[in-house]
Image (cartoon, rainbow, N blue to C red; front, side):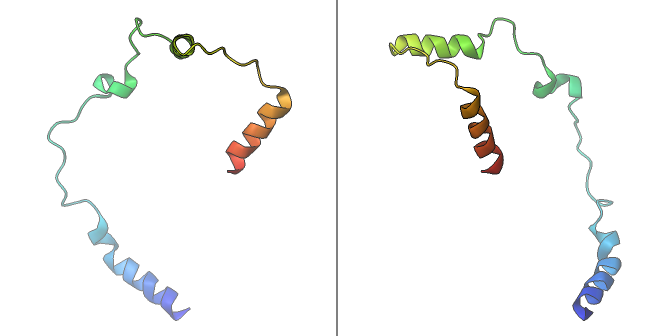
Length: 82
């Protein structure tokens, strides 16, 4: 308990120096409209399905059928729980 109150006192005394008052602001800020994450993908790009089907055809493989509901639920469970 003493350690906790000592830490709280230290935190209260040092908090103002933890701020970013003295840090420099960036000189150039990229507007959100120009950031790559906010741009729409180009229309001429192929979809992921086209890419996968092309790769399967090149390797002379056929796609497997749709998984059953039980299999999908089990996969989802393992993804969620690790």
